Length: 100
Image 1 (cartoon, helix red, strand yellow):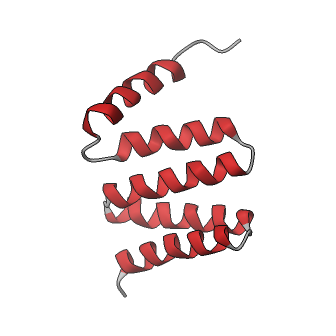
Image 2 (cartoon, rainbow, N blue to C red):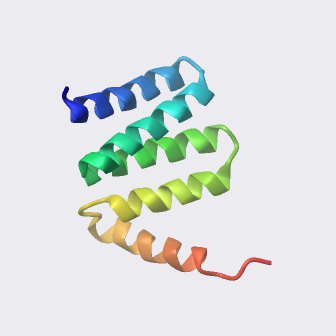
Image 3 (cartoon, rainbow, N blue to C red):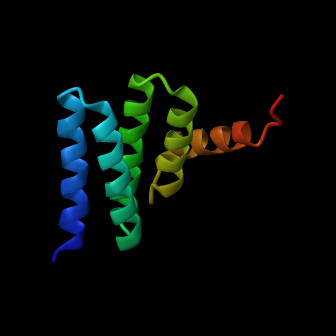
């Protein structure tokens, strides 16, 4: 009945699946964790999970998806600090550039 613990457990499962080399199942578990954390209003947990998903997407050879997830991690971080705040502004500007 503890939904926050369930969402965090899904994130832990994701890490274990990633370590075991099952990257597809890890990505799915990260998405489930994100849904739960978003529904529960846990921005810090959501930001950490977006960061982990971004690293996984880089490992899978999906740099655009990884950049999008990194942006989501910055957007959901409740206190990004000066460096991450700067990165948030830069990435926001890059994503608004016209596409060829």
